[in-house]
Image (tube, rainbow, N blue to C red; front, side, top):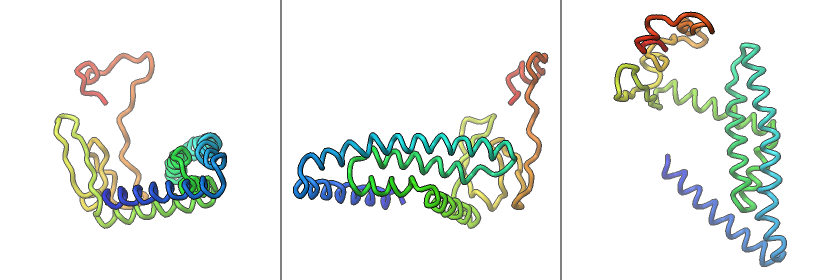
Length: 186
């Protein structure tokens, strides 16, 4: 998979350089310079402004008790959009501009989430966790053994199952628990 992404990135870079060459030859150096600098300045600002809206929607979803995953993926796509605008070239600028369109970005986010869920459900993904008392890492299939948090607690194997209650954090001003003094508290 990584090799395919590397090949795709190389192909996009070569195509962008060729398109920049064509712009310089047919439209002049001023158009060439505009293609290099304007997208980075304007597109980065647009991505930053839309990113603020995504953060507000994530906070709103969390306050309402809704799943913020679509907004979080949208935030990652906005980060990718900013990178596409910074990378010089008409092709990457066009891809970045497409991801700035909220309905299209939501569609891509939904597809990414669906792909991730499908891959998790068929066990095609490995999750690496670290046990608290160990320094080594363990890896295993993400779903066949059930969903577990980083502490190894079962999160329930059925969709929509509520996770077990997490340990209570100490209240400000409360005396520390004996576990906290030993360093065993979360």
